[in-house]
Amino acid sequence: MIGVVIDSSLRRASGSLFGLAYGDALGKPTEFLSVPEIHRRYGPDGPRELVGDPVLVTDDTQMALAVAWALHGAPGYTPEAVEPLLRRRFLDWAASPENNRAPGMTCLRACGELGRGLPWQQATVIDSKGCGANMRVTPVGLLDVDLDTLAGLSQLQAGLTHGHPTGLAASELTAYAVRVLRDGAALAELPGLLTDRARTQRRTYRADWLGDLWRRSGADSPAEFIAQGWDECRSALDRLDAALRLPDDGGDPCRHTGEGWIAEEALATALLCVLRHPDDPVAAIGRGATTAGDSDSIAALAGAFLGTTHGLSGWPADWSPRIEYADQLATLGAAWD
Image 1 (spheres, one colour):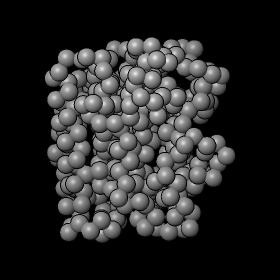
Image 2 (cartoon, rainbow, N blue to C red):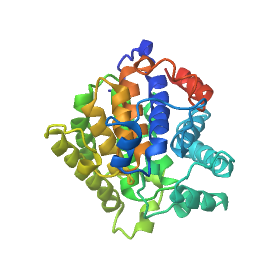
Image 3 (cartoon, rainbow, N blue to C red):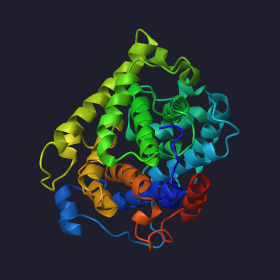
Image 4 (tube, one colour):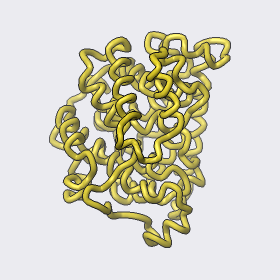
């Protein structure tokens, strides 16, 4: 996909970043509700309108912005250049008074250790593959970098907090999905493209980005360590493929691909929502918000994917002035469009 001519008129980067925030906001009030309760409050289709002025988001958008600003300010895309910037942005987020949106314990715990000055390979929560690893990686997919750099950046930003190999692999796949969509891939191609990526990367341990992280896991080798992550992502993609072969009954997508609290399930379930509603971004994030699982993260990823495909014009025009952090989303989107 490298070297293709990108149609900047679609404003795919802006569509992706705003879409992530829209999905996050739509799923925020439903995250800990059952599907029957969501239906009772919002009707059979779930939420479809953003409420508030500003419309509040969660830590998903806050941390995606932290990654985005770290990348935006980087003098180069190398581990030495990017790691200190990610660390600083994560610590600023952790200490911010706006960090009051039920943040994930893995991120808080890892940030506490990062704040002590530990190397990130020691600070990370090695056994966590929570979706906090990939809910924030969308900005990496919007960069004009080669695929090896995309992979390294994706895994590094995940690894600062979530050291499990599946968190690393799912983050790379999430950013890769954004990249191929930005470059014009059709939504229907995504499952196959991601499966191929998982297959080819299965034993690729990026030591230049990850250092000796693998040693904390108890694995016998770096290749064995990272293969576990890719295998678990492949299993989630297999469940996605099986779900797509079934007729859509309009029910909770989590029944097929998982509740999304962990990284590979968040990716697969978001993709299921996207592929059930490829031409209706609002319906897709509404579907993500109408789940028994991690509704805000599922809807945020769905919004990022469909925003990349349809661009900023794919979203209701009256949403962008009201979404929290609209000025930051607009600035970053314009920089990368």
